Length: 338
Image (cartoon, rainbow, N blue to C red):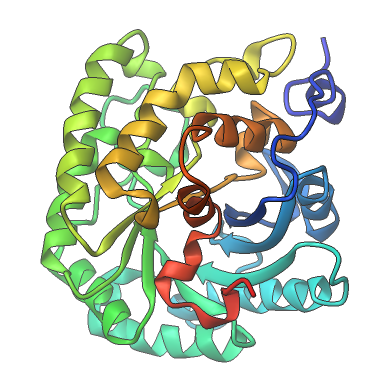
């Protein structure tokens, strides 16, 4: 059997592209210059995916602790990631027929409170006009059964200094991205209510886990997750990313199979999460994300986007467009499709 996530394994499922002309902003991908669990993933690999059939015009880079500075004040070390991605984005603009990296969401420690302003200023200087926000993720789990390293630390959402940092983001016109586990959704809701002036973006549906202590509990977890999403969606400052559910954390097991899923298999397994979130938030507050190369462990890029399009096949053209280019709703002028 080919190794899951490998080119050979992903190529074992090939499909015709659904709605190949529809413009897309991929609102969530990473870049790794240094080898990681997903290998390296630089501009050539990104273009290999975005150029695989769908009309991906622009992308948004999301923090992944890549190329941080190794010297200088610790609070400023994440600025190295912005410096790195800004250079890659400049390279992407040299090829207008390919996807352009049009936005950067980096990292800063929100527990710095109002003092995080210094870090944001440095990100802005380094970002070549592309810096748009911060992701300080908060996954936390005390079962000891998850392999995801992010779950080892306490959830920061309730800390006063953390909330002050998120408020500072809003005051300065930046967005706040995060991801966490489903059982933290109420903590996230409390954060959203505490910082109503800051635009918050929920990544990966709040990760309804399906591994470790949460394996075999899909229906139970879905009902709890469903209720929480309804409450979170009542906060007008929160937007939802639609994607990240092919991560192994969610327990669908595709990363262990002889071949990846087809788009029909993907859509059949995951449509309840997508349609419930869209129903709660509305298409204007939802945006598709690939979460590549992380979700590449389970599914190929063209098949993933085929799955997205099949899930929303019955929506209007205007609604599909909203979910395909949704960063336009966050008043990010350099990202607008024209």
